[in-house]
Length: 415
Image (cartoon, rainbow, N blue to C red; front, side):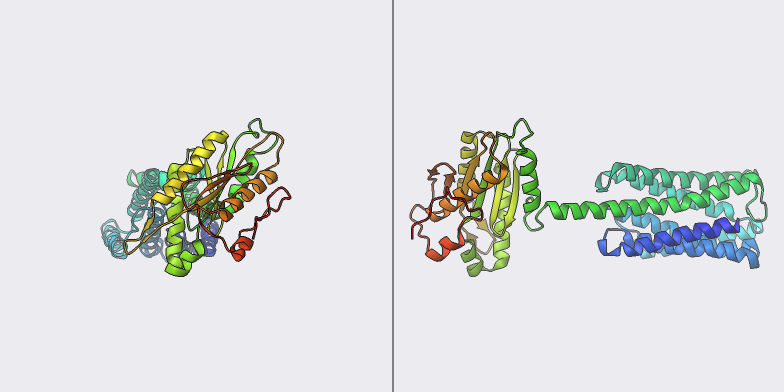
């Protein structure tokens, strides 16, 4: 039994090290998980070694409050992970002191038989942990299989603790597995000690899965605006316009560029520029159909994939965005910043590659910028939209606005 206790303590100590190594992820509840695993490992080690040199009931008096504190810290960690308030330090201290007083009183009354108090209290705490997991599973941001594993693990530990308390209370078995090493006593204690580390393993899986989910979102979404990242957007385009797909010849691509964004940054500061970018994404997203994808290519440049759109519908959508942006200036409370957007549109053709579509949309956007801004240009023709029809573009700006995808078919702007 001593060997099993030491093995369990080592296993839980390893989980404490893993929790500590995951601290950079800053997942809610991680500090409580680390403290709980560390305390549980220390208390179980003390129980294993202390029984070799001290009477079992004295070891239990010191060990049980530590185990209860470890269980409460575990509960606090799960509450934080599932977006619930953590248990306050005062609550933890009060609960452990109350348990220690009852535990000691029961020790004096029963002459050393105290296991029933600790096992019953631990069973209740793990039952509350199970309830916490079930209640907060929708806010977990973790795979359902990991949540189910955590719920089953905590429920199993709660059941084992309760069975242990019942068997002691009814006299089926003794209160101490060292003093009464019956087969049933040893079996229950061994299962409880071996299952206990599974709870910490389930917490590790939840923390790790949330960390991975956050990294995936960081790669897939622009952290400032919430639009798809450049890589994620191009991946979405690639999946749709794969020539093996039956609908690859349908759809449209819009390239968008906020007009005079550099001047906006220079005049009002980058914090207003950031607000303008977020404002643009917010109002544009509301105008898009559910199947559309909006991505940020970089700076003030955006793109929209309309996967099942006809040319006419794409034109109407682009003009609606131009009108929406022009009619919805950024209002910061201190100042109102007018905004306009230029758009280049390219529609898919049978047999055309994604690279060709990107170049055509980029070239159309280039023409919209150099021909006056706040307008829509198609890859095959220029379509004026309501806006600035007399805007002048300097030679330096024309060089800056030169298409990123050079093609021989694009017209050369006149100086």
